[in-house]
Image (cartoon, rainbow over all chains, first blue to last red; front, side, top):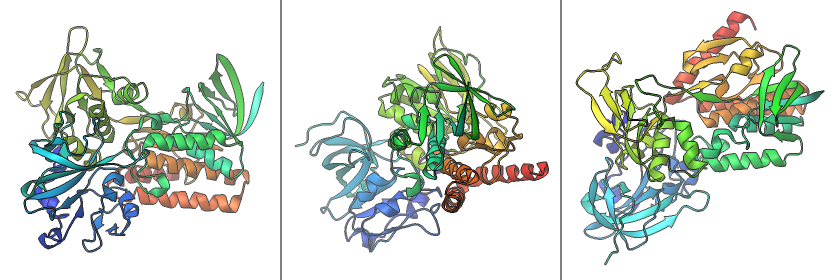
Length: 167
Length: 366
């Protein structure tokens, strides 16, 4: 249970998971933020105004599935590193997962990295298709990994270091 | 010689910096005293992004918020910043004595805002004096200020925000974090901090504690054990966890000695984590002209400390007659921000503490 061990349960995740229909349309942000804390930078970060928080700053964020275009801006802005963007439409077999990353070394585009799930367990080696810095002040990187579709809702981190050169 | 000062702010952390800036912005002259060699308080080592709203610079890293506030304060012609300056005493006649460069300086401030922050609590267990056992604050200073890798393998005690954040920062520094143990049944800090630690592979053991530490001359490991619902150690659950560092993040307590010395009405309020001065809605203590803002009047987040500092700073300006109408509006805006920051479930403890403060204030008839 999240409050006991830091691992969100399937029930927690179900509250923020976009519908299959929405996932089939393109990339979307998933806010894995389940606690009522006073925090709202994601709302201001979204250029599409797709993230809302009602009635106040202590609510958890809600993503409007019609307004969100999966632009990834919120991924680096969330202070809790709790927002991920998943694109299930990348290819027939693979999906793209964009996750926040704050360790060195930062893997380069094309390298293979070891993906970890929400418990930190190794899931497999996946190519980095994009590595974008959040900027000098923000300093959070946004890494986009290409993962098998059945791992798109599992991979949420990478193992630091030991990156392999991709083919 | 006694130097007259209009507003004295004691402590250059988030509350003190914001208090100085607010009072000066309304027109008052401020002397800011900081015992460290640089102002910034705990902000100088907060490398994580802050929570809260835009008004508390949410999304920015604490260290950059600190740099920005320090810059504003040091560039402000109405604020004099004195570093390496430790306040020693507050006397009945209003004189405040300060140790600076081996000189014993004396000031007589018209108004004083105490922003002395908090100190870390410690934990009692066998061999807790072995080298290698630190408070989380010391480890954070070594890493983020000194640039020193503080450990090879660490066990963190405490899953409040400090324990979770410092564990994560140790991972960033290349330290192997064996686990986080927390005596309470639940994680006390933000669950997003817990989740990012967990997905980096760090186990968080709630309902566990340190039974004892061991090592020959320095820490070599700790024995962890599980606690029952009455917080008693459960025999047979002991686990040996080798480590060279044990980091304690078991809470903070207000550094309120100066308020005691000044004769403020003090009360022990559990929800505020210790003895605190009883303050009014302007954050003035029972001593006329003496204010308290930030962790010194109750342990809370840095975002709240900044807003409290701003509230006290403008309240002092009002009492001195500076830009009264606008400064009063700022006071009220700060109050509203605090209500918002404290309105969620995580603010329950502080709200309960503040109710007790109001009760104690009523009892004293002030």
